[in-house]
Image 1 (cartoon, rainbow, N blue to C red):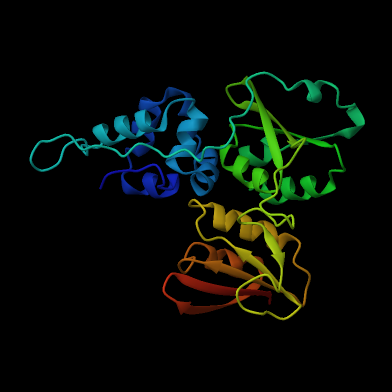
Image 2: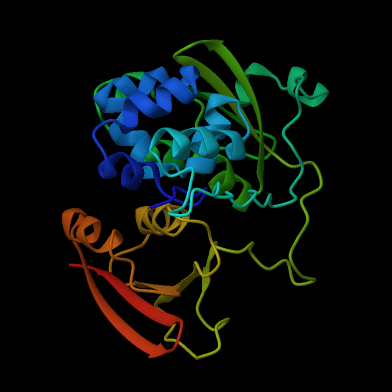
Length: 281
C-alpha cells in the first residue's frame, strides 16, 4: 500500500516493524523517532506531511524515499508509481527571522511553557498548552519549548488566531513563539470563528438547545478533528453538550472519550454527515 501525505504517522509505523529505520534513513533529522516516547506522541499527532516539515524536507521527497524503501515505488508492471504532490493550504509561511514586534514584547507579557520533560516521559502536553493559551492576555505571547518541532500544533493555534515563529536551539530543543496576528482576518462580516472552532448553538443548520456547543470538523486534515475536539472538551462545563459534526464516525476519538470520562451518542443523519453528542459521564 502506497504511503501518502495524509496518512497518520502511527498508522504508517504499524504497517511494518522496519518503518522507523526506513523513515530515519530517509530523513536523518528524524532520528528522535528511535525514542519510543517521542515515537508514540508524534505518531498520534502528526501526518506524514507534518513529519516531513519537522524533518525540514519536502513532503513529496520523504514520501518518495519511504515508498521506494518499502518496495512500493513500482506497480505490478514495473512502472514507477507517482506520488501525488502535496497540496499546500496556501496560508502565509512562518517568518524566517524573528518578527520585529516580538523583540519589543515586554517580559511580563511572555508566558513560558516547557513541555520537554512531559514529552520525554510519555505524557501528552496538549492540555497544558491549551490551558496556557487561555491565560494569555491581549498582546501576550506563549513561548513553548519542546523536544521536536510541534508542527501539528501550528494549525490548531492558527485556527484560534495565533501565528508562530520557531527556533531550533538543539536537535531535541525547539522554542516556538505563538502570538496573535496583528490584523486577524475574520471569516465573515459577523466575525465568525474559523473552521474547526467551537461556536455557540443556533449557528448550525438545525436549531440546538442552548446548552449545546457546536464543533464542525468537516474538511479538516487527519488528527485535527480529534485535537480540536479534545481542546473543546477541556472547557466544556458540566451539564453542557459538545456536538461534533463530522464526515464519518471518529473511531480513534471514541476510546479517548471513555478514558476521559465522557459519554457519547452517534447519529448518522445524512450521507457524509455524522453528529457526535458528547457529555460528561
